[in-house]
Image (cartoon, rainbow, N blue to C red):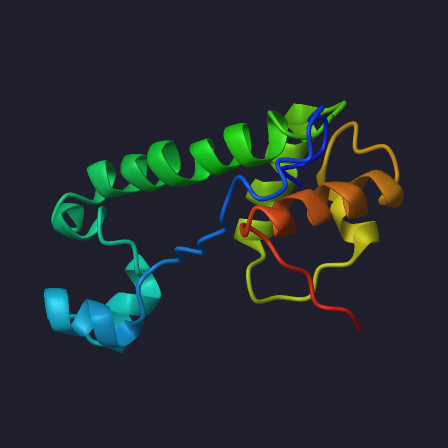
Length: 137
């Protein structure tokens, strides 16, 4: 996804280093969290000191993690004709996390969704940014 739109290949001039959220063992060691806290709050060390202030924690997650990932990793690197639809699709995926959600149901829930091809493409973009992942039947 990063190479799209570049005029140079950047061959030999970069290294990909995957840095993901922390594991349950790391959050247990650093913050004393059990599995319930890890599942609820996630393994984001920057947000850990904010869990005593739920509104501030939520804003941090949205502004620092989600907004940045969508704005920089998706919208700046790929052409998205309907960015508002991409955001609504992300929100819908969050609301239905861990549940079966068909494309037909998504179309019914989203205004101006277009067609399933558009939704499938946007889901691929969100998956590429590590935000949403669908499971095939």
